[in-house]
Image (cartoon, rainbow, N blue to C red; front, side):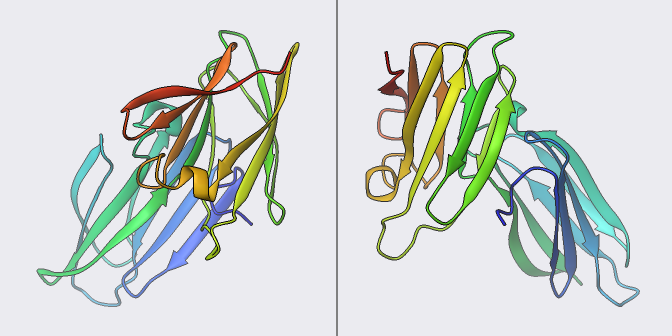
Length: 207
């Protein structure tokens, strides 16, 4: 089961905190960080992303820090939330609580729905219908042979295509920090290329 798939709840139990992530739809997420320290001491939690700083929160045992966000509204080139955990004024850890490393965004135009079905030989991500500017995202580990391949069937009206959306040896370096962000337009599919610092045409829609 992919950890970032929609309609899911994820619980990570750590020595100091629990992390819950819920997503009722593909682009909207709620993250909850809970203090599990069996003590009268508070812990300090400081969570942030590249473009959103949640500031430091002092949590008693059993208290939560939670926030909502839509991945379509954050920096898609760095869709990560991480937290610093401090207990008794001593840093106890740095934890990545959310990381979407493959992102596909519908830029077909207003009122255009992108029908999307992505999979690898081992992992079927299911079918998704993305409204304009909405996104689908997932994360995975590349195998040691670097043969990981994800392909996607996409369609909208008269546009229908089958695309190799992630090929490990092709994409690991050019995406930048192993984060691949695709824009699906009516004319072509664009991929953000790190060295160019811009979106570059990769695929035409089949005629």
